[in-house]
Image (cartoon, rainbow, N blue to C red; front, top):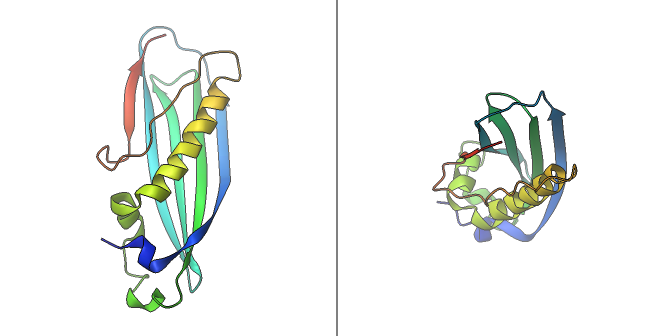
Length: 146
């Protein structure tokens, strides 16, 4: 597992990358709401790494709405430690899933907050999603009754 404090500077840039909200035909009766997290890492040699965290909400059967929120974080390499790892062959996203807790929790918390704000905009109770947990394996799902 990569020691992120060794290879990256403590300063980082966080930004909202994308929001997609689609209103769909309302569905009556019991339905399942799915919450899926996706993590992507992109190498920007020799400067650093961009980590992208996406959280998407959807329903089974499809209905009500689809919501996707994406936040990204750019981490800068420590110049003195950059060359110790072959970053082109490393599974960077996998390493962040396993040991990138503070960064992933920060991105998941921002996504959760924005999802809550968007889902409460029409006067309904907000949908509050959980923080990222590697025990979940990414996807989080639960049932919600209408």
